[in-house]
Figure 1 (cartoon, one colour):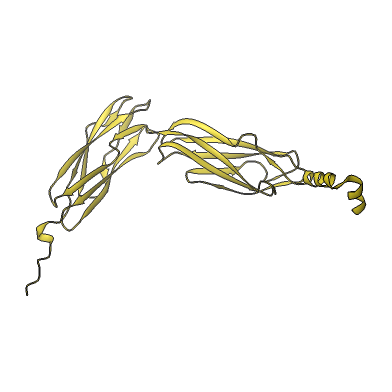
Figure 2 (cartoon, rainbow, N blue to C red):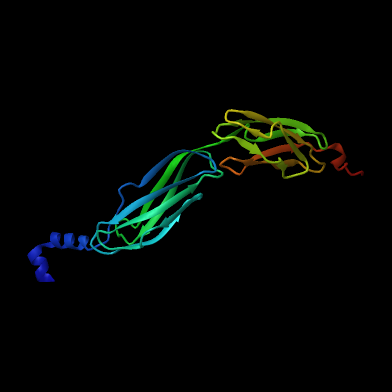
Length: 237
């Protein structure tokens, strides 16, 4: 070995050693899926290769919330071999710009973790205006009404299922059984808080048929004033 170093020089030995190591190479580490509606899925296959001189081992794959990733090829790649990773983003519950990250772990000593990215814009097929309702200083057992507008931004006709609420203190009615593209409808809410509560919270749930999303969930919040009858009178001396 000493003779080999003397003949080749330390630089040559380092170069030969580097060639004998696994090297992960990825031409494109980011994919933009463009614009999709909430409820749709966006998929992409990332390709990678072993540009080193030793077997490349994919040790594990991690991903951020809303995303899945699966290695389609063998997890051990010989020098010069290529592999593929299938990634899928489920947009349910996401809105606006999103970036999802996939972490690819391997035995590459210089790049043990490689980050891959799925990015794009998630749009609402049915836009709610406002997207939540907040009421202030409500009186117990006194009903307050509010309205929400639904606007159809998609391309297909959508029908509504029976509107639901998560609490008996919240009632909701729809002005229409469905919407065509560009159409709008109104949700009328009626909130009647019960005594003994300082805060109210619930959801209006509208099932969707013909849409990418399964339902619309609209949060409703309120602060409740303390009624005189619920206040404890001061103790007598």
